[in-house]
Amino acid sequence: GIQVEQSPPDLILQEGANSTLRCNFSDSVNNLQWFHQNPWGQLINLFYIPSGTKQNGRLSATTVATERYSLLYISSSQTTDSGVYFCAVEGTTDSWGKLQFGAGTQVVVTP
Amino acid sequence: DGGITQSPKYLFRKEGQNVTLSCEQNLNHDAMYWYRQDPGQGLRLIYYSQIVNDFQKGDIAEGYSVSREKKESFPLTVTSAQKNPTAFYLCASTTGGSPLHFGNGTRLTVT
Image (tube, rainbow over all chains, first blue to last red; front, side, top):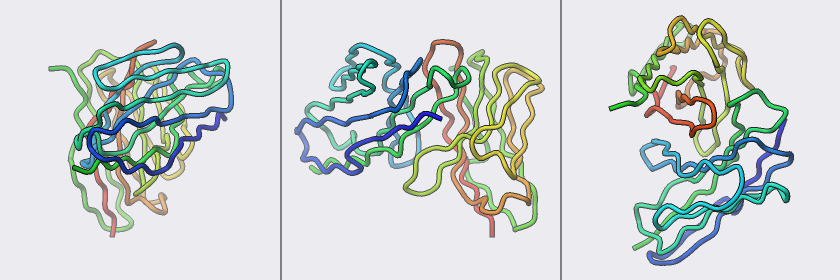
């Protein structure tokens, strides 16, 4: 099946800093989504972005499907941005909706 | 409000007992999923269902069983055959071309 690699595995930021998280995948995709898991375990969908660029407040994401990667940008980070960020993809040869998750990037934002 | 309800939030069982985790959604989504998350790890797919009365094994189905008798409900049974059942279990749902939504999860501890 499709392989998903996220980098860096861990990230420590000072409040107000900007950062970029990366997701590489091994095959063509129909579907790519970014999620944030807060310290209580709740998973929130940030972006549904199989290609192109989207922005939502201080967060934005870009997927370059032809080069098999996606980037998540966090600007002016806040302590509430702490948690784990997951990238999940559905390969073109996978069943509809069957998402493969990366191992995540653990982000800690310090005051 | 529409959403996914998982119950209970915490569950404790003795080794050798089967246990059923509940997942209900009122989003009118066609597809539902069960994921398992171990500490510090990503999410792994246990089972998924794209329509009522049909479901497929995910990557780690051994020791688990599911049913999909109603569109809104997708219960997961953790059987005594599952060797390491202690984990965080997440239910999710989606419909074609839309983001994946998660419930708040059930933390299962088996001793």
